[in-house]
Every structure is written in structure tokens, then in C-alpha cells.
Image (cartoon, rainbow, N blue to C red; front, side):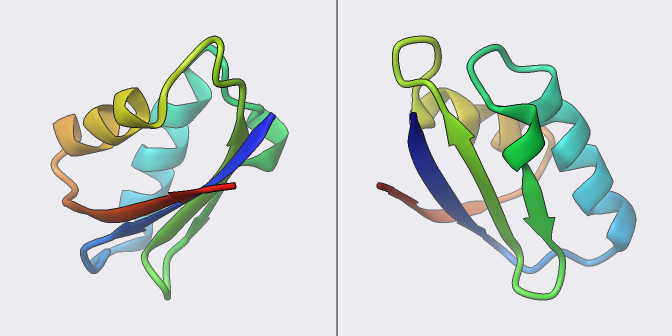
Length: 75
């Protein structure tokens, strides 16, 4: 398992965080118990299985929701 932190452009409303969290919960390979969308810092944190999903796929899913991904960090 890898841990990811994705920095987004400023989130404007709490329902934005719920929308992102809901989308990530539907992706195979993401540990659903680790998903945290931090509204105040506009960050998304989660653990994922690199063999099932890539960070690029997660970024593109978030982008398709209309949120701009600024940078990602994977450990």
C-alpha cells in the first residue's frame, strides 16, 4: 500500500469535499477507511494499492469532477 496526498485548488464548499470522497470510495484499489478530504487545506489523503490503481487515474477522476489538481505526493 502507498499513501497519497493530493493538493487541490481551493475548495469552496463542504459539499465539494463530500463529492470528492464519494467518487474516491467508488474506485477499486483505494482503502476506503483512509480517505480524508481536508476542506480547510484543500487536500485529499488516502492509501491505495498501486497494482490496482495509479495516482494518475485518481487525479483524472478528481479532475473530471471539476476540481483542479495542483500536485500529488506518493510515499
